[in-house]
Length: 166
Ligand SMILES: CC(C)(COP(=O)(O)OP(=O)(O)OC[C@H]1O[C@@H](n2cnc3c(N)ncnc32)[C@H](O)[C@@H]1OP(=O)(O)O)[C@@H](O)C(=O)NCCC(=O)NCCS
Image (cartoon, rainbow, N blue to C red; front, side, top):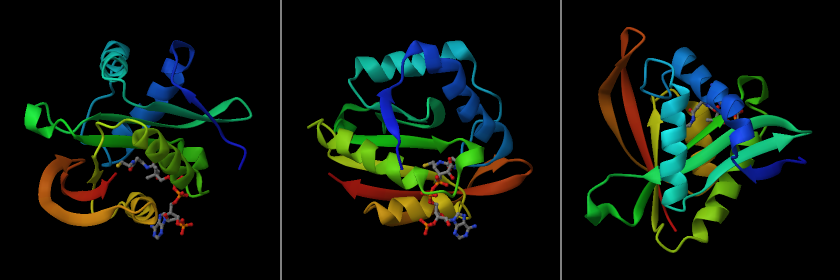
C-alpha cells in the first residue's frame, strides 16, 4: 500500500486540521458542530506530545491521507491506563483500506507505551459502519451503545463503544 507514517509535525498542521474539520462539518462521527480553530488543534497536539502519546500522520506520495491520535479517556487519575483514540481518513481516500492500515499502525505504537492498557473507540453514530468494521477487524470488542446521546444535524445520534485490551 506504500503508506509512510510520520509523527505529525508543524508543517502538516493545516492539512491535518482540514481533514479533521471536514468530518466535523459533514458528518456525525465527531460531536463537535463548529470547525476546530488552529489554536485549539495546537493545544490538543501539545497535550498529546506532553503525555507522550501517538499522533500519526499517514502519507502516500507525499500526500496526507489520514491522521490518528490518542488522548486520555478521562482526566480522573483512576483512568490513567485507559485511552481513547481518533482516526480520520481524507474523504477522497475512504473505503480503500487505509483506515484499517492506519489503525493497525496506531495499535503498534500504543503497545510500545506501557501505560496504555485499554484503548476505547467512541464511535459517532450506529450507522458508522466503516469505523465499526475497522475496529472489529483490529480486534476491538463491541461494548455497548449509548442511545441518542448526541444531537447534531437536527437528529439524535448514538455513541458506540468498542474496546481493546493491550
Ligand atoms: C472510519 C474511517 C477512519 C475508516 O477509514 P477507511 O479508510 O474508509 O477504512 P477501510 O477502507 O480500511 O475499511 C472500511 C470498511 O468499511 C466498509 N464500509 C464502509 N461503508 C460501508 C457501508 N455503508 N456498509 C457496509 N460496509 C461499509 C468498507 O467496504 C470497508 O470494508 P472492508 O474492510 O471489508 O473492505 C473513515 O471512514 C473516516 O475517516 N470516517 C470519518 C471519521 C470517523 O468516523 N472516525 C472514526 C472515529 S472512532
